[in-house]
Image (cartoon, helix red, strand yellow):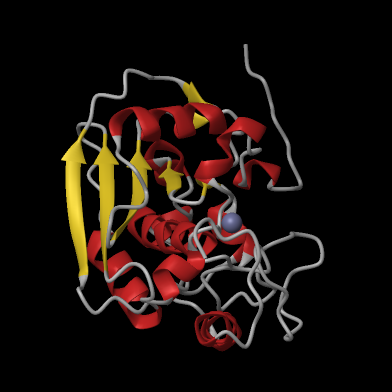
Length: 247
Ligand SMILES: [Zn+2]
């Protein structure tokens, strides 16, 4: 039996936050913790991946975070193979549970920890390639990324994976308008918390399985000037941030 699931929105992008999970925060809730160095001098980005699902964009994510975050002690990649023991479909709650089961706290004494999960299987909304589920957790579904490869390999699954991984990191940074209100009109009105610029990695179609139908040229894997302007405003304090877990 084939069940066709057609979704014009990308509601699956953000998991609902449970009330009793307040300390885990919403996506963007640890944005200032990354953008500023007041509390956290260094950062570890953890990549938890199922056997055979090695992430290809670890260095790229580190580079993108270094470009916008203030971490004088540096950003370190920690990669770990995990048997998640979930083989079919994942809800956003499953992602959250797996991260807190296999990973540690988000906030160490002076170290900020973000988690990138690369499980086998797909999100229960099969159009979703990646999801940000709380202030320190995202997942990228490589099985879906592979299927999103365009005709004749354009875009390639590697290009899509790089873009989706940076895109989800962008949500942890609060993009777009997750924990602030941009003075620039660049949020897509039909796709909340995403960019309306197809040259931004925060473009709404990046994390959907028909990304190849929307972007035919090179897929962006970096933030555009408007995204960067938002991040600079948050970092400097000129843009007010809400729902921060620690500040
Ligand atoms: Zn998104």
